[in-house]
Length: 322
Image 1 (cartoon, helix red, strand yellow):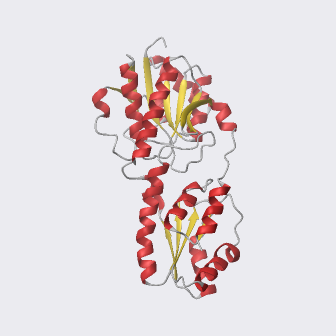
Image 2: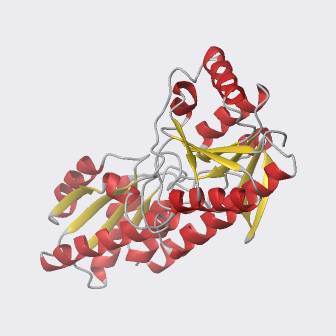
Image 3: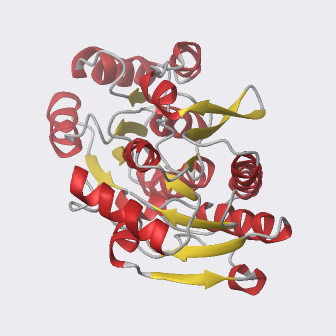
């Protein structure tokens, strides 16, 4: 790379582990004699030149912190050919010869557009939903699951005390992975995800009655955000079964908190790989975790992949939650 400078930004929703990825990018790049530019608030920062030079100490004591020290935002201006050209021109003016983008699918499309304007980009999957098809795992997923599990465990205490049914919505608009794994971990009676057909009488009421027959008196129902409607579900459950029912939406608490060991480690590995690719002159790439290995794909190829829901794990959940 001619100008020996690399920028790093975070885009879209924040995810625990983004700071670990930023740290790995900065320190790996500096070790390879690159200048590192931090970009505030995603692609907005490229458009507004909201940048600063980073050094080894810029990323001290951030690996354990949730959120992103670079902040994040969505940019309407960038979502136009004129906006992308302006960002590319700013990169050239600032001698930025490569950009590491940490985010989700929308962020990847932005990186592909920037690459097409002559600025090499490499992307890292950072989203708690685990909804990046090319990667088995995304930065933030493990932390979000553990947070959701801890919250539901607390809800279970009061549900058990009152013989209640608690209907809990966790994040995941298009992807039910967070709901599925959290549901297994908390012993949910039913797990409702967007990938699987849902009928409240068959998927919830029948299962509650089946477990009642074996002596169960309190129930946890986990619902993915993409399905929603937890208030109406709770009302229907109470009306149909006579069991006092309550709905809880966990919301953005799942995005926060100190990242787990897994998120810190995976993020660090991916950040290191991103710099290796740029140093080797490669761009328009997405870093992924596949079968336990850190690999990379062309962005267009990655975006065209279809995510497969884990039907086997879902069946396991059905078999053991009775």
